[in-house]
Image (cartoon, rainbow, N blue to C red; front, side):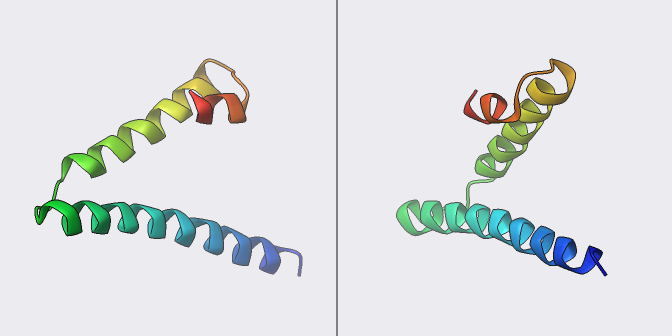
Length: 67
């Protein structure tokens, strides 16, 4: 029964990430009254960059996130 706490923690982390992305969309839309799709593309590029730095180049995860 050790998998249940891990599933709950993964769900909380994923929902926190989605919440921050939604908050960013909300802040941009509230300011300029325009739904900017480029913000979502920027988030995707950032995620792939962290993956590239960490997995492919072998850097530490915290350093990859900072870069």
